[in-house]
Length: 571
Image 1 (tube, helix red, strand yellow):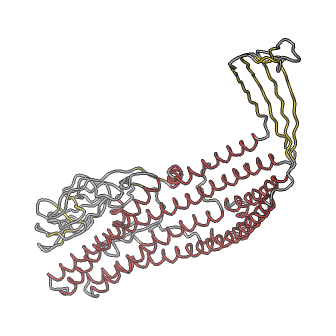
Image 2 (cartoon, rainbow, N blue to C red):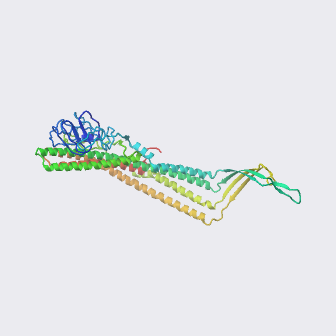
Image 3 (tube, rainbow, N blue to C red):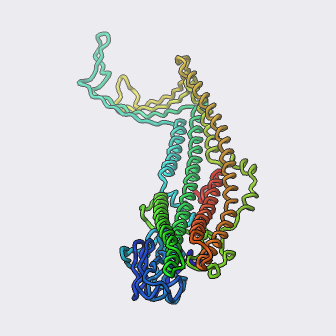
């Protein structure tokens, strides 16, 4: 990692100096202390402007006060205005902010805010950084599951299916019911036959207690079919839960890596601004010494303005990515976040140093090429396994069985029904009509539907059509799975190959930028060569960042296509 990259990443915090940095605005540098601005120009009023990491400077009052990038190890030595990021561990380094703007620092700094220990510049302001929680991918996926309303609903649907299966099975269980009645008459009922004395056949009151048991006999298998259908629907919805988990996992992967991408691109923008400000200082210095041209100063001013615009855009993108992440895991939108990162994502060489002073490009750790890993994939084998693993396919296979059970259930309207009933009655008060206190009876009844106006026939036809639709949907899903896997594989191989190209281009761009700066300082090159080289370096850095995280997202998409995209977490 280069010095400017280390400065932006905030690898360590050095205290004990007098330099302090504001995030934005124009910072004024005075002889007694070093103040700069991360996004503006400062006027040097001291003995001179110190070059990065140096202990003395040579520029006069026109020197540009520039940034110690937020979250950096920066500071400057010397007596005048601070100019440019100082080398890490400089003997006179100023106190750096602990939290970088939109940066995941190795010191655990939270992205998105300038660090504490910041001092107001000419128009800047003091901003205190907030340290956030560290997240890795596994933790992110687990939180995404917990915050998903779709997943909660899908799990409840599985519980509902179980209740429906229980209801269907309950139709084959005995039903027991009890009844009680009491009647009060105005007077007793008496009957006289053939002039004989009246006989009381019913008293002034009567009571009845009845207990009945009814059992439906599953003569044609309708109860079993309904129970099986509900159980299969539960299984289908369980696969839907897994599908939602996989989709949620892919979303978590994408948002996680896009936040890292945005944070690194913010680092690039910060480093580019710091470099532009340093190059502006050099152009002003050479023009003051009548070595450079006025047009070089104007170009440098334009370069700084463009870098400031790019920085604001990168800050906005990082803020949006952070908001998306917080929404994913169910946190307040502005919660600060620190993510575990990949190794090998590199911000370019240090600003303001010669090529000989810079860390050799060959020693810069870059993201390892995944080409060999990707080319070893057996796409045919993965495709076959995906048919047996993708929850959408498994759910639809079950849906076909559910539809087939529906055909059986549709025949119920014209199938016989057998019921057994047993009942017992108790009459506390006997009478002529109920001379026995206890009676019992067993009844068997069978119902044979003969004609229902064609209702059952139409229901059966409908069920058969639904079954055909379910089978057609299954075949279509298998075709979609094949297409998904092939497209995801092509995207993966393309993303893998782009990493090699991006790494090579970045190495060359660092060398070119350092050489152009060295040539300009030596008076053998135009300043246009420097600005072109710096623009090419910024593009190469962003391309390398995009290549690395495009590959990570492509990997997640391929796992999703195979039905493996739940981050390895159990349900």
